[in-house]
Amino acid sequence: MLTFQKVLTGFQTRADARAERTDAFADGIAWIENEFVPIGKARIPILDQGFLHSDLTYDVPAVWNGRIFRLDDHLDRLEVSCAKMRLPLPIARPELRRLVMELVSRSGLRDAYVEIIVTRGLKFLRGAQAEDIIPNLYLMAVPYVWILPLEYQNHGAPAVVTRTVRRTPPGALDPTIKNLQWGDLVRGLMEAGDRDSFFPILPDGDGNATEGAGYNIVLVRNGELHTPRRGVLEGITRRTVLEIAAARGLKTHVTEIPIQALYECDELFMCSTAGGIMPLVLLDGNIVGDGTVGPVTRMIWEAYWDLHDDPQLSEPVTYAP
Ligand SMILES: Cc1ncc(COP(=O)(O)O)c(C=O)c1O
Image (cartoon, rainbow, N blue to C red; front, side, top):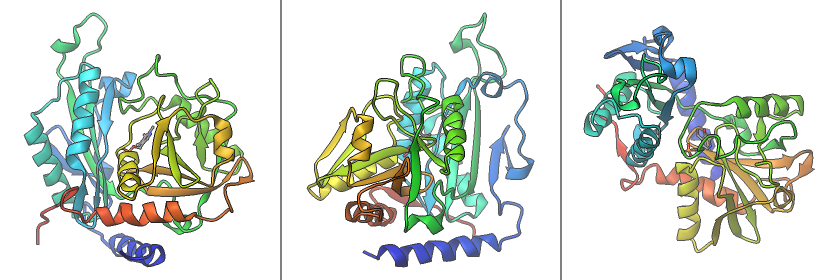
């Protein structure tokens, strides 16, 4: 296993190499209305209900070093989200899988963030049956997204527990359906910005922590991992974290986490397909643990990136020569 620092240097080198590309898909590619187009030229029809009413669901697998990570787990979650939304998958799953691989292959991106969006389509649900409406599919692949920029991964970041906004409650919007109704998360981002952070953690309104703008949170206390059970997306990265911990004999708890527990933990991190394991070292201006990236976070960080080469969890993309 490579060390934290060495791995980070390798990541930066790959990002620098990509930045030198000048071809049409260097900044990304989209698949819209049966066509592959450069990301900057991609347009959605204004009448799409995904745009007008956020009537959609989506999922995001990532490609890392030319291998796509946990694609079937992402497609499973997408199918469950679609079923909960009464949105039929616009094309059969094997075809979707093939299309995703072709998209990445055409992009030439070795490290990519791949978004699969299913919208209600062009017809509003009012006065219609969900089953009678033809949904739309959109795909895009862009260079890998780091919620916590690479240069901060080694040092950690400051986060805030939001005071002006709580997470939309599950009874209003089921957060296990991956969705883009980001009103609460965007308000959280704005509050965080006002308080010298980019990383909000939203409470649930009952004194418990939920998640942030595009990431789950995990705390470490006495060598055990805890992550919120309710009011959150069931992240694939979080699942990977829990599997890594369990494989090393660490206890894991998916449970209610009182906000207070965040201030009393030894280590705290965010996790997401967009950035992996992202350490937090300050919370509302208070030092988390000893203020450095802790040993459990580092171990999980290293194991997480290592797993991207594991043939059980990732598969190679075939690129044109
Ligand atoms: C609200 C929210 N929570 C958690 C996550 C992390 O999920 P995953 O690990 O599957 O990327 C995301 C990812 O975009 C998200 O939007």
